[in-house]
View 1: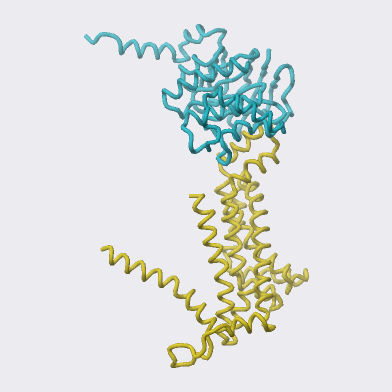
View 2: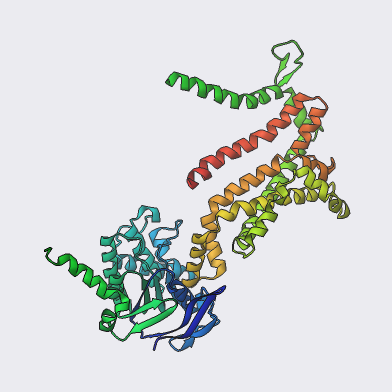
Amino acid sequence: MFLEIKQLSKSFQNDLIVDRLSLSLDQHRTLSILGKSGCGKTTLLKLIAGLETADQGSIRVNGEDMSGKTPAERKIVYLYQEDLLFPHLSVRGNIGFGLKLQKIPASDIKEQVDLMIQRLELQGQGDKMPHQLSGGQRQRVSFGRAIITNPRLLLLDEPFGSLDVGTRQRMQELFKELTALYGITSLFVTHDLKEAILMGDDIGLMKKGSLQVYPDKQDFLLDPGTGVRSEIEFWESLLKPNY
Amino acid sequence: MNKLRYIVLSGLGLGILFPFAFLAMLSFSGEWFFPEVLPGYFGLKNWKEVLTSESGMGISFASSLGISLLVATLGTGTGFIWSKSIAYHSQKETWLVLAYFPYMLSPVVLAACLNFFFLKSGLSGTWQGVVLGQYLVAFPYSVIFFQAFWNHRTRQFEQLVLTLGGSSRQAFVQVILPLAKGMILVCFFQTFLISWFEYGLTALVGVGKVQTLTVKVFLYIKEANFYYGAIACCLLVWPPVLLLYLNKRFVYNRLV
Protein backbone atom coordinates (compact mmCIF):
# COMPACT_ATOMS: atom_id res chain seq x y z
CA MET A 1 0.00 0.00 0.00
CA PHE A 2 1.22 3.49 -0.81
CA LEU A 3 -0.34 5.22 2.19
CA GLU A 4 -0.69 3.28 5.42
CA ILE A 5 -2.05 4.78 8.61
CA LYS A 6 -2.28 2.66 11.74
CA GLN A 7 -3.99 3.40 15.05
CA LEU A 8 -3.61 7.18 14.70
CA SER A 9 -4.91 9.24 17.63
CA LYS A 10 -4.94 12.90 18.50
CA SER A 11 -6.47 14.79 21.42
CA PHE A 12 -6.71 18.50 22.12
CA GLN A 13 -6.86 19.01 25.88
CA ASN A 14 -9.34 16.28 26.85
CA ASP A 15 -11.16 16.04 23.52
CA LEU A 16 -10.32 12.99 21.46
CA ILE A 17 -10.43 14.27 17.89
CA VAL A 18 -8.90 11.35 15.98
CA ASP A 19 -9.53 7.98 17.57
CA ARG A 20 -7.23 5.02 16.67
CA LEU A 21 -7.82 5.62 12.98
CA SER A 22 -6.42 3.27 10.38
CA LEU A 23 -6.55 3.42 6.60
CA SER A 24 -4.62 2.36 3.54
CA LEU A 25 -4.59 3.67 0.01
CA ASP A 26 -3.00 2.52 -3.24
CA GLN A 27 -0.87 4.82 -5.37
CA HIS A 28 -2.62 7.04 -7.97
CA ARG A 29 -5.99 6.67 -6.28
CA THR A 30 -8.24 9.15 -4.51
CA LEU A 31 -9.94 8.37 -1.23
CA SER A 32 -13.00 10.52 -0.53
CA ILE A 33 -13.68 11.08 3.13
CA LEU A 34 -17.21 12.16 3.96
CA GLY A 35 -17.91 13.66 7.34
CA LYS A 36 -19.78 16.39 9.15
CA SER A 37 -18.10 19.47 10.61
CA GLY A 38 -16.09 18.69 13.73
CA CYS A 39 -15.71 14.95 13.02
CA GLY A 40 -11.90 15.25 12.86
CA LYS A 41 -11.38 15.38 9.07
CA THR A 42 -9.17 18.47 9.09
CA THR A 43 -7.12 17.21 12.03
CA LEU A 44 -6.53 13.91 10.20
CA LEU A 45 -5.21 15.76 7.14
CA LYS A 46 -3.01 18.01 9.29
CA LEU A 47 -1.54 14.97 11.04
CA ILE A 48 -0.69 13.40 7.68
CA ALA A 49 0.81 16.69 6.41
CA GLY A 50 2.94 17.03 9.56
CA LEU A 51 1.22 20.25 10.64
CA GLU A 52 0.06 18.55 13.84
CA THR A 53 1.80 15.87 15.86
CA ALA A 54 -0.01 12.61 16.58
CA ASP A 55 -0.34 11.36 20.15
CA GLN A 56 0.06 7.80 18.90
CA GLY A 57 -0.03 5.71 15.75
CA SER A 58 2.00 5.66 12.58
CA ILE A 59 1.86 7.11 9.08
CA ARG A 60 3.84 5.48 6.28
CA VAL A 61 4.06 6.78 2.74
CA ASN A 62 5.51 4.36 0.20
CA GLY A 63 6.94 2.36 3.10
CA GLU A 64 8.67 5.38 4.64
CA ASP A 65 7.81 6.33 8.22
CA MET A 66 6.69 9.95 8.42
CA SER A 67 7.16 10.39 12.16
CA GLY A 68 9.77 13.03 12.93
CA LYS A 69 9.73 14.39 9.39
CA THR A 70 8.98 18.08 8.84
CA PRO A 71 6.10 19.06 6.53
CA ALA A 72 8.64 20.07 3.86
CA GLU A 73 10.40 16.69 4.03
CA ARG A 74 7.15 14.76 3.62
CA LYS A 75 6.36 16.13 0.13
CA ILE A 76 2.67 16.07 1.04
CA VAL A 77 0.75 19.16 -0.02
CA TYR A 78 -2.25 20.28 2.00
CA LEU A 79 -4.90 22.36 0.23
CA TYR A 80 -7.29 24.42 2.32
CA GLN A 81 -10.89 25.27 1.58
CA GLU A 82 -9.73 28.81 0.80
CA ASP A 83 -7.48 29.08 -2.22
CA LEU A 84 -4.84 31.01 -0.21
CA LEU A 85 -3.21 32.58 -3.25
CA PHE A 86 -0.32 34.83 -2.30
CA PRO A 87 -1.73 38.31 -2.94
CA HIS A 88 1.66 39.82 -3.78
CA LEU A 89 2.35 37.31 -6.58
CA SER A 90 0.81 37.01 -10.05
CA VAL A 91 -0.80 33.81 -11.33
CA ARG A 92 2.61 32.75 -12.70
CA GLY A 93 4.32 33.60 -9.42
CA ASN A 94 1.77 31.60 -7.46
CA ILE A 95 1.89 28.52 -9.67
CA GLY A 96 5.69 28.51 -9.78
CA PHE A 97 6.09 29.24 -6.07
CA GLY A 98 6.78 25.66 -4.97
CA LEU A 99 9.34 25.19 -7.75
CA LYS A 100 11.08 28.42 -6.74
CA LEU A 101 11.33 27.08 -3.18
CA GLN A 102 13.12 24.04 -4.60
CA LYS A 103 15.57 26.42 -6.34
CA ILE A 104 14.77 25.05 -9.79
CA PRO A 105 16.30 27.18 -12.61
CA ALA A 106 14.06 30.04 -13.74
CA SER A 107 13.87 28.82 -17.35
CA ASP A 108 12.60 25.39 -16.21
CA ILE A 109 10.07 27.04 -13.91
CA LYS A 110 8.79 29.19 -16.77
CA GLU A 111 8.40 26.17 -19.03
CA GLN A 112 6.53 24.13 -16.41
CA VAL A 113 4.35 27.06 -15.38
CA ASP A 114 3.37 27.79 -19.00
CA LEU A 115 2.35 24.16 -19.46
CA MET A 116 0.39 24.17 -16.22
CA ILE A 117 -1.41 27.39 -17.19
CA GLN A 118 -2.52 25.67 -20.40
CA ARG A 119 -3.72 22.60 -18.56
CA LEU A 120 -5.62 24.73 -16.09
CA GLU A 121 -7.25 26.56 -19.03
CA LEU A 122 -5.89 29.86 -17.78
CA GLN A 123 -4.26 31.06 -20.99
CA GLY A 124 -3.87 34.84 -21.01
CA GLN A 125 -4.32 35.09 -17.22
CA GLY A 126 -0.69 34.45 -16.24
CA ASP A 127 0.20 38.03 -15.43
CA LYS A 128 -2.98 38.81 -13.51
CA MET A 129 -2.94 39.29 -9.76
CA PRO A 130 -5.17 37.09 -7.54
CA HIS A 131 -7.71 39.85 -6.87
CA GLN A 132 -8.38 40.04 -10.63
CA LEU A 133 -9.51 36.39 -10.82
CA SER A 134 -12.88 34.73 -10.25
CA GLY A 135 -13.39 32.16 -7.49
CA GLY A 136 -13.04 29.23 -9.89
CA GLN A 137 -9.91 30.64 -11.51
CA ARG A 138 -8.34 31.20 -8.10
CA GLN A 139 -9.05 27.63 -7.09
CA ARG A 140 -7.50 26.38 -10.34
CA VAL A 141 -4.33 28.37 -9.64
CA SER A 142 -4.26 26.88 -6.17
CA PHE A 143 -4.49 23.38 -7.67
CA GLY A 144 -1.80 24.11 -10.21
CA ARG A 145 0.51 25.45 -7.52
CA ALA A 146 0.15 22.19 -5.58
CA ILE A 147 0.29 19.72 -8.48
CA ILE A 148 3.29 21.31 -10.20
CA THR A 149 5.50 20.39 -7.22
CA ASN A 150 4.74 16.72 -7.94
CA PRO A 151 3.67 15.85 -4.38
CA ARG A 152 3.68 12.27 -3.17
CA LEU A 153 0.26 12.85 -1.68
CA LEU A 154 -2.29 15.62 -2.10
CA LEU A 155 -4.61 16.42 0.79
CA LEU A 156 -7.72 18.39 -0.09
CA ASP A 157 -9.77 19.90 2.70
CA GLU A 158 -13.17 20.74 1.18
CA PRO A 159 -11.49 22.65 -1.66
CA PHE A 160 -14.72 23.50 -3.50
CA GLY A 161 -16.76 24.44 -0.45
CA SER A 162 -16.88 28.13 -1.30
CA LEU A 163 -17.72 27.77 -5.02
CA ASP A 164 -21.11 28.06 -6.71
CA VAL A 165 -22.75 24.90 -8.11
CA GLY A 166 -21.66 25.38 -11.74
CA THR A 167 -18.06 26.28 -10.95
CA ARG A 168 -17.89 23.47 -8.44
CA GLN A 169 -18.95 20.94 -11.08
CA ARG A 170 -16.33 22.22 -13.54
CA MET A 171 -13.65 22.11 -10.85
CA GLN A 172 -14.56 18.54 -9.95
CA GLU A 173 -14.10 17.53 -13.61
CA LEU A 174 -10.81 19.40 -13.85
CA PHE A 175 -9.57 17.78 -10.65
CA LYS A 176 -10.35 14.31 -12.03
CA GLU A 177 -8.55 15.14 -15.28
CA LEU A 178 -5.45 16.51 -13.59
CA THR A 179 -5.11 13.77 -10.98
CA ALA A 180 -5.35 11.18 -13.76
CA LEU A 181 -2.84 13.08 -15.93
CA TYR A 182 -0.26 13.55 -13.16
CA GLY A 183 -0.93 10.23 -11.39
CA ILE A 184 -1.73 11.99 -8.13
CA THR A 185 -2.58 10.07 -4.97
CA SER A 186 -4.98 12.07 -2.84
CA LEU A 187 -7.32 12.27 0.12
CA PHE A 188 -10.38 14.34 -0.66
CA VAL A 189 -12.31 15.52 2.37
CA THR A 190 -15.84 16.83 1.94
CA HIS A 191 -19.15 17.08 3.74
CA ASP A 192 -21.03 16.91 0.42
CA LEU A 193 -22.40 13.45 -0.22
CA LYS A 194 -22.57 13.75 -3.99
CA GLU A 195 -19.07 15.16 -4.19
CA ALA A 196 -17.69 12.36 -2.05
CA ILE A 197 -19.18 9.76 -4.39
CA LEU A 198 -18.03 11.57 -7.54
CA MET A 199 -14.46 12.38 -6.54
CA GLY A 200 -13.23 9.23 -4.86
CA ASP A 201 -12.00 5.96 -6.30
CA ASP A 202 -12.49 4.73 -2.74
CA ILE A 203 -14.81 6.20 -0.18
CA GLY A 204 -14.88 6.46 3.59
CA LEU A 205 -17.15 7.87 6.27
CA MET A 206 -15.71 9.68 9.26
CA LYS A 207 -17.63 9.99 12.52
CA LYS A 208 -16.35 11.20 15.90
CA GLY A 209 -12.71 10.67 14.97
CA SER A 210 -13.16 7.20 13.49
CA LEU A 211 -13.03 6.33 9.83
CA GLN A 212 -14.83 3.52 8.04
CA VAL A 213 -13.51 2.86 4.53
CA TYR A 214 -15.93 0.89 2.36
CA PRO A 215 -14.74 -2.02 0.22
CA ASP A 216 -16.60 -0.52 -2.75
CA LYS A 217 -19.05 2.23 -3.54
CA GLN A 218 -22.02 -0.14 -3.50
CA ASP A 219 -21.44 -0.88 0.19
CA PHE A 220 -21.28 2.84 0.85
CA LEU A 221 -24.56 3.42 -0.99
CA LEU A 222 -26.32 0.63 0.92
CA ASP A 223 -25.14 1.69 4.38
CA PRO A 224 -27.99 3.65 6.07
CA GLY A 225 -25.41 5.60 8.13
CA THR A 226 -24.04 7.39 5.07
CA GLY A 227 -27.30 9.20 4.38
CA VAL A 228 -27.44 8.05 0.74
CA ARG A 229 -30.70 6.17 1.15
CA SER A 230 -32.47 9.02 2.93
CA GLU A 231 -31.25 11.35 0.19
CA ILE A 232 -32.69 9.04 -2.50
CA GLU A 233 -35.96 8.73 -0.60
CA PHE A 234 -36.21 12.50 -0.37
CA TRP A 235 -35.86 12.98 -4.13
CA GLU A 236 -38.20 10.08 -4.87
CA SER A 237 -40.86 11.59 -2.59
CA LEU A 238 -40.73 14.76 -4.66
CA LEU A 239 -41.30 12.78 -7.84
CA LYS A 240 -44.32 10.80 -6.51
CA PRO A 241 -47.72 11.93 -7.82
CA ASN A 242 -49.63 14.02 -5.31
CA TYR A 243 -52.95 12.23 -4.52
CA MET B 1 -26.36 73.88 1.35
CA ASN B 2 -23.25 73.48 -0.77
CA LYS B 3 -22.13 76.99 0.13
CA LEU B 4 -22.54 76.31 3.85
CA ARG B 5 -20.59 73.10 3.45
CA TYR B 6 -17.85 74.96 1.61
CA ILE B 7 -17.66 77.61 4.37
CA VAL B 8 -17.54 75.00 7.15
CA LEU B 9 -14.87 72.95 5.38
CA SER B 10 -12.80 76.05 4.61
CA GLY B 11 -13.07 77.10 8.25
CA LEU B 12 -11.95 73.68 9.40
CA GLY B 13 -9.08 73.65 6.89
CA LEU B 14 -7.91 77.07 8.02
CA GLY B 15 -8.19 76.04 11.66
CA ILE B 16 -5.95 73.03 11.01
CA LEU B 17 -3.42 74.84 8.84
CA PHE B 18 -3.22 78.07 10.83
CA PRO B 19 -0.91 76.82 13.64
CA PHE B 20 1.53 75.42 11.05
CA ALA B 21 1.48 78.62 8.99
CA PHE B 22 1.78 80.80 12.09
CA LEU B 23 4.78 78.80 13.35
CA ALA B 24 6.49 79.23 9.99
CA MET B 25 5.73 82.96 10.00
CA LEU B 26 6.98 83.36 13.57
CA SER B 27 10.25 81.65 12.68
CA PHE B 28 10.91 84.33 10.03
CA SER B 29 9.84 87.20 12.32
CA GLY B 30 11.63 89.53 14.74
CA GLU B 31 11.11 92.71 16.77
CA TRP B 32 7.42 91.95 17.25
CA PHE B 33 6.32 93.92 20.29
CA PHE B 34 2.93 94.66 21.74
CA PRO B 35 0.76 96.36 20.45
CA GLU B 36 2.17 96.02 16.91
CA VAL B 37 -0.12 93.95 14.68
CA LEU B 38 2.70 92.81 12.40
CA PRO B 39 6.34 92.00 13.23
CA GLY B 40 8.95 94.75 12.82
CA TYR B 41 11.24 92.39 10.92
CA PHE B 42 10.42 89.58 8.50
CA GLY B 43 13.24 87.66 6.84
CA LEU B 44 15.79 84.88 7.05
CA LYS B 45 17.86 86.33 9.92
CA ASN B 46 16.66 83.85 12.58
CA TRP B 47 17.21 80.83 10.35
CA LYS B 48 20.70 82.04 9.34
CA GLU B 49 21.64 82.63 12.98
CA VAL B 50 20.35 79.26 14.06
CA LEU B 51 22.03 77.38 11.22
CA THR B 52 25.39 79.21 11.40
CA SER B 53 25.76 79.92 15.15
CA GLU B 54 26.54 77.43 17.89
CA SER B 55 22.90 77.06 18.93
CA GLY B 56 23.18 73.32 18.31
CA MET B 57 19.92 73.17 16.38
CA GLY B 58 21.49 71.14 13.57
CA ILE B 59 22.91 68.66 16.06
CA SER B 60 19.52 68.44 17.81
CA PHE B 61 17.81 67.78 14.50
CA ALA B 62 20.35 65.08 13.63
CA SER B 63 20.05 63.57 17.14
CA SER B 64 16.27 63.48 16.93
CA LEU B 65 16.37 61.97 13.48
CA GLY B 66 19.01 59.36 14.42
CA ILE B 67 17.33 58.38 17.69
CA SER B 68 13.87 58.19 16.11
CA LEU B 69 15.06 56.13 13.16
CA LEU B 70 16.87 53.74 15.49
CA VAL B 71 13.91 53.42 17.88
CA ALA B 72 11.47 52.93 14.98
CA THR B 73 13.70 50.31 13.33
CA LEU B 74 14.38 48.38 16.53
CA GLY B 75 10.83 48.75 17.85
CA THR B 76 9.17 47.66 14.62
CA GLY B 77 11.65 44.86 13.84
CA THR B 78 11.71 43.21 17.24
CA GLY B 79 8.03 43.96 17.85
CA PHE B 80 7.08 42.16 14.63
CA ILE B 81 9.01 39.03 15.55
CA TRP B 82 7.91 38.96 19.20
CA SER B 83 4.30 39.71 18.33
CA LYS B 84 4.20 36.40 16.43
CA SER B 85 5.44 34.41 19.42
CA ILE B 86 2.93 36.17 21.65
CA ALA B 87 0.02 35.79 19.20
CA TYR B 88 0.51 32.02 19.02
CA HIS B 89 1.37 31.56 22.72
CA SER B 90 -1.02 29.76 25.05
CA GLN B 91 -0.63 32.63 27.57
CA LYS B 92 -1.26 35.29 24.94
CA GLU B 93 -3.64 37.37 27.07
CA THR B 94 -1.16 37.64 29.96
CA TRP B 95 1.63 38.78 27.65
CA LEU B 96 -0.64 41.37 26.07
CA VAL B 97 -1.60 42.79 29.47
CA LEU B 98 2.13 43.17 30.15
CA ALA B 99 2.56 44.89 26.78
CA TYR B 100 -0.04 47.47 27.78
CA PHE B 101 1.77 48.19 31.04
CA PRO B 102 3.99 51.07 29.77
CA TYR B 103 0.82 52.83 28.57
CA MET B 104 -0.78 52.72 32.00
CA LEU B 105 1.84 55.22 33.16
CA SER B 106 2.94 58.43 31.53
CA PRO B 107 6.40 58.12 29.89
CA VAL B 108 7.88 60.47 32.54
CA VAL B 109 6.62 58.28 35.38
CA LEU B 110 7.93 55.21 33.57
CA ALA B 111 11.32 56.91 33.17
CA ALA B 112 11.32 57.93 36.85
CA CYS B 113 10.60 54.30 37.81
CA LEU B 114 13.48 53.09 35.65
CA ASN B 115 15.85 55.95 36.39
CA PHE B 116 17.71 53.99 39.06
CA PHE B 117 18.63 51.32 36.50
CA PHE B 118 19.70 53.92 33.95
CA LEU B 119 21.95 55.57 36.59
CA LYS B 120 23.43 52.24 37.74
CA SER B 121 24.11 51.07 34.20
CA GLY B 122 25.71 54.36 33.19
CA LEU B 123 23.14 54.94 30.48
CA SER B 124 21.76 58.11 32.04
CA GLY B 125 22.73 61.15 29.98
CA THR B 126 23.67 59.10 26.91
CA TRP B 127 21.92 58.71 23.57
CA GLN B 128 21.98 54.94 24.09
CA GLY B 129 19.98 55.45 27.29
CA VAL B 130 17.47 57.64 25.49
CA VAL B 131 17.12 55.05 22.71
CA LEU B 132 16.58 52.29 25.29
CA GLY B 133 14.06 54.39 27.22
CA GLN B 134 12.05 55.21 24.10
CA TYR B 135 12.35 51.62 22.87
CA LEU B 136 10.62 50.47 26.07
CA VAL B 137 7.61 52.48 24.92
CA ALA B 138 7.83 51.74 21.17
CA PHE B 139 8.37 47.96 21.49
CA PRO B 140 5.11 47.14 23.33
CA TYR B 141 3.24 49.42 20.95
CA SER B 142 4.63 47.43 18.04
CA VAL B 143 3.77 44.11 19.70
CA ILE B 144 0.16 45.22 20.20
CA PHE B 145 -0.04 46.72 16.70
CA PHE B 146 0.97 43.48 14.95
CA GLN B 147 -1.46 41.24 16.88
CA ALA B 148 -4.04 41.82 14.13
CA PHE B 149 -1.61 40.51 11.52
CA TRP B 150 -0.96 37.12 13.14
CA ASN B 151 -4.39 35.67 12.50
CA HIS B 152 -5.68 32.29 11.37
CA ARG B 153 -5.19 33.16 7.70
CA THR B 154 -1.54 34.17 8.16
CA ARG B 155 -0.93 30.88 9.93
CA GLN B 156 -2.53 29.01 7.02
CA PHE B 157 -0.21 30.82 4.61
CA GLU B 158 2.80 29.75 6.67
CA GLN B 159 1.62 26.15 6.80
CA LEU B 160 0.95 26.13 3.07
CA VAL B 161 4.53 27.20 2.35
CA LEU B 162 5.80 24.39 4.61
CA THR B 163 3.76 21.75 2.80
CA LEU B 164 4.87 23.15 -0.55
CA GLY B 165 8.41 22.23 0.52
CA GLY B 166 9.59 25.51 2.04
CA SER B 167 11.39 26.14 5.30
CA SER B 168 10.16 28.46 8.06
CA ARG B 169 12.75 31.00 6.88
CA GLN B 170 11.48 30.84 3.29
CA ALA B 171 7.91 31.26 4.55
CA PHE B 172 8.98 34.31 6.52
CA VAL B 173 11.02 35.98 3.78
CA GLN B 174 8.97 35.09 0.72
CA VAL B 175 5.44 35.27 2.08
CA ILE B 176 5.10 36.75 5.56
CA LEU B 177 7.27 39.83 5.02
CA PRO B 178 5.61 40.78 1.70
CA LEU B 179 2.17 40.27 3.28
CA ALA B 180 3.11 42.41 6.27
CA LYS B 181 4.95 45.10 4.30
CA GLY B 182 2.18 47.69 4.54
CA MET B 183 1.65 47.15 8.26
CA ILE B 184 5.39 47.23 8.91
CA LEU B 185 5.64 50.61 7.19
CA VAL B 186 2.70 52.00 9.15
CA CYS B 187 4.16 50.70 12.42
CA PHE B 188 7.57 52.15 11.54
CA PHE B 189 5.90 55.50 10.94
CA GLN B 190 3.96 55.35 14.22
CA THR B 191 6.95 54.34 16.35
CA PHE B 192 9.03 57.02 14.61
CA LEU B 193 6.43 59.59 15.71
CA ILE B 194 6.33 58.19 19.26
CA SER B 195 10.06 58.73 19.48
CA TRP B 196 10.17 62.00 17.52
CA PHE B 197 7.69 63.82 19.79
CA GLU B 198 8.82 62.22 23.06
CA TYR B 199 9.85 64.80 25.65
CA GLY B 200 9.41 63.76 29.30
CA LEU B 201 11.29 60.46 29.19
CA THR B 202 14.01 61.93 26.95
CA ALA B 203 14.55 64.91 29.25
CA LEU B 204 14.73 62.66 32.33
CA VAL B 205 17.01 59.97 30.89
CA GLY B 206 19.04 62.42 28.80
CA VAL B 207 19.49 64.78 31.80
CA GLY B 208 20.01 67.70 29.42
CA LYS B 209 23.01 66.09 27.74
CA VAL B 210 20.96 64.57 24.93
CA GLN B 211 19.21 67.52 23.36
CA THR B 212 16.62 66.31 20.91
CA LEU B 213 14.38 68.83 19.14
CA THR B 214 11.58 68.48 21.70
CA VAL B 215 14.04 69.23 24.50
CA LYS B 216 15.29 72.21 22.49
CA VAL B 217 11.75 73.57 21.96
CA PHE B 218 11.05 73.53 25.68
CA LEU B 219 14.45 75.11 26.37
CA TYR B 220 13.68 78.06 24.06
CA ILE B 221 10.18 78.41 25.50
CA LYS B 222 11.67 78.54 29.00
CA GLU B 223 14.05 81.26 27.77
CA ALA B 224 11.06 83.08 26.22
CA ASN B 225 12.90 82.93 22.87
CA PHE B 226 9.81 82.19 20.84
CA TYR B 227 11.43 82.98 17.45
CA TYR B 228 13.98 80.20 17.95
CA GLY B 229 11.28 78.11 19.57
CA ALA B 230 9.25 78.50 16.39
CA ILE B 231 12.22 77.37 14.27
CA ALA B 232 12.66 74.31 16.48
CA CYS B 233 8.95 73.63 16.22
CA CYS B 234 9.08 73.90 12.42
CA LEU B 235 11.94 71.43 12.33
CA LEU B 236 9.94 69.22 14.69
CA VAL B 237 6.61 69.40 12.89
CA TRP B 238 7.35 69.56 9.17
CA PRO B 239 9.27 66.26 8.76
CA PRO B 240 6.43 64.21 10.31
CA VAL B 241 3.92 66.13 8.17
CA LEU B 242 5.96 65.15 5.11
CA LEU B 243 6.15 61.57 6.39
CA LEU B 244 2.40 61.58 7.04
CA TYR B 245 1.78 62.70 3.47
CA LEU B 246 4.11 60.03 2.05
CA ASN B 247 2.50 57.42 4.30
CA LYS B 248 -0.99 58.43 3.18
CA ARG B 249 0.02 58.63 -0.47
CA PHE B 250 2.04 55.44 -0.83
CA VAL B 251 1.16 53.12 2.06
CA TYR B 252 -2.25 53.71 3.64
CA ASN B 253 -4.11 54.05 0.34
CA ARG B 254 -2.81 50.66 -0.69
CA LEU B 255 -3.86 49.04 2.58
CA VAL B 256 -7.52 50.12 2.46
